[in-house]
Every structure is written in C-alpha cells, then in structure tokens.
Amino acid sequence: MRLFAAVLPPRPAVEELALLVDELRALPGADELRWTGRPGWHYTLAFMGEVDDELVPDLSDRLARAAHRTGRFPLRVHGGGRFGRRALWAGAAGGLDDMRLLAERADAAARRAGVPMDEHRRYQAHLTLARSRVDTDLRPFVAELERFKGSRWEVAELALVRSNLPTSGVAGERPRYETVEAWPLGHAG
Image (cartoon, rainbow, N blue to C red; front, side, top):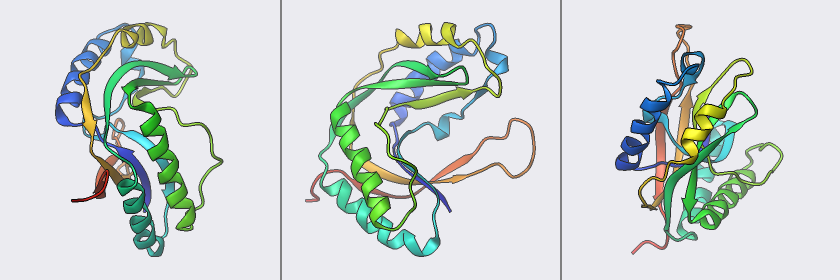
C-alpha cells in the first residue's frame, strides 16, 4: 500500500483555508491548475511510497514511539509558496522546529522498519493546494497566499495515511486518502 506520515489540520483550519482557496480559484489562470481536494489536505512528514504489508506492523509500532516521544505543538496555516512553476502550496507557522523533529522521527521510523526511503532532505512544511502539468506563472497565487494567516491550533497526533491513486481514468479524479492509524503526541496518560 502507498503510505505517508502526516499532520492533518483540524476542520476549522481546513474551512478557513478553503475560503482563501475559493478566492484563488477565481483568479485568472486558475482553471489551468489541478486543485487538490479539501478532504486530502495534509502536511506530509515522511513519504514512504509503496510499503509491503508485512512491514506495516513494525512501522506502526515505530511511528507510535515517535509520536509518544514528541510533545504537542502549536501550528497554523500561514503564507504559501511554489515549487518551481508547477506546484502551489500553503505554508505553516508556529512550532516548525517541533514539526521538523516529528518529520525526522517519522522518516527514521520508516527506515528502521525496512521501508526504502528516498534521499533525505531538509523538511519543508507545506500543504499542496494545486499542481500544473506545464510551467505556469504561479506568482499571483503566491502573492495572495503570502497574506494568509490562519488561526492557531494544536498538533495532537501523528497519522499514517494511505494514498489511493485514481484508477478510473476520469479526467479530474483525485487521489483518496484514508487514515490507517493515528497516535497521540506526547506521553499517554
């Protein structure tokens, strides 16, 4: 199964961001972008790709330990940017050092469980909003995102999410995400 570890924003944060995304979708050129679905908005901590079923129990145990070793932290959706000329994202503010630590721990948990991981690079907290198959001028969208400051919320859990890629071949179909398991941050008790 195709898996990743993530922080999932709570419903109020998603609804707040959705108002801005509705405005972005009204900008010239927005129809050329493939917008991500709100139910799938997340901050990826560690992308694992295809994971053999037999590795999942050990992976789950290791992710649970990573979550319990990491305390809760504040976060908010804040600003945004682009990767090149093909991906538009919303950023984050608040406990970014804690988020990076959780990402490092999720990556290490996957490696120790035997999941082949891509080359390690510095963590960049981002929530993907839209993609383009061709180079696109994303600057007007980024300019609007840069002014966005969402409400503060507390990250309380680490989620293991399964990505179900589109299979119908229907244009515009999006991946579906389902939480396989989630663990509370900090020591239980």
